[in-house]
Amino acid sequence: MHFNVANRKVHYWASFAAALPLLVIITSGILLQMKKQWNFVQPPEQRGTGTVPAITFDRLMLGLQSVPDLGVTGWDDVDRVDVRPGRGVAKVTLKSRWEVQVDLGSGRVMQTAYRRSDLIESIHDGSFLAGDWTKLGLFLPAGITLLLLWLSGVWMVWVQLIGKRRRRKMAKHKAAAVAVLAFGLPWLAVAQQKPLEIDPLVGHWETGKDGVEPLVRADARKWTTDLSETRFPLAAVRGVDDFTGGVLSVKFKLIAGDSDQIAGLAFGISPKAEYYYARYNTKDGNVALWRFVNGDRERIIDGSEHLQLPLDTWHDLRVEVRGTRVIAVVNDKLRIEHTLAAPVSGRVGFYTKRDSVTAFKAFSATR
Image (cartoon, rainbow, N blue to C red; front, side):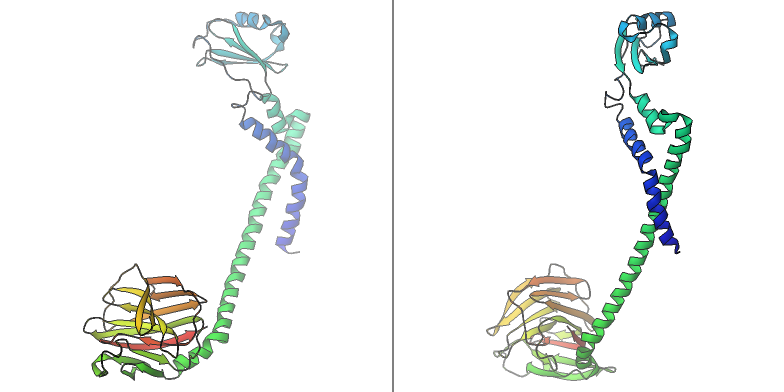
């Protein structure tokens, strides 16, 4: 039999065997915890007139016998005497479980009350039933059993947690692998493994290579179109014709620009050249979400975080679209989130401004 299975069975049966003694121990323990706050368990302690005992034992006995209801005839009726000089009181516990508090200064009986805490203590340790037989033979083993139950319970929980953590980690790895194979590879095959092909829609765009990696570049210095036509170059990536949701990512390099250096990912590009885009620029030093409609831009949201990125260095831009939810991140540092009024669909591509020189590479689109 497996150790964990045997441990579980022993745990269950030991719980039943120790249940009654443990219930008695717990209940009586709760009462003892409250003996100073609950007069039913233990009478409240009174304060006498002096802190130095001024009475003899004979005077103490006379005080006890002055209360006929106690039925004290002599010291044989007394269980113990607890002298509290700091409180100026002597607490006399009778064998009948009554407690008498006597003033150490005057010998006056200040309080008589039934003391239940001693009875509860004897119930708590098991000696109430048959003395040491139940105390050492039943309640002590029950306490040891409780300790073993706790240890075995901790072991079972720990084993389950470790097992769940391992299974969860394996499931995540499997799910990630399946997702990449099922959804990522077809898009990556189009967008990355093949040359990065674009359809220039606005502005001057050219293709090239960064080492062995294909890239595209928007070069404002070679754009001769009339400025009044549009100030915002746009190129659509071939092979991603109807993007409705997923993750777009690209590396961009800001090279030059008279007034600004900017790079953006456009999505939802319609045949009328209306689209959304998430961009970073050096002028504001942040990431922002815009919409291009009716021939002009509309600002949707600006990121509150600002960071100046160096020129001639590759940076990461990532846009995630899930339904109407859009998240844009630059270099895992600058981030915005926004909920659109409606879902998007259309082509995807790259965006810059008229006077910028910007390069893009390592583009990918995954569902």
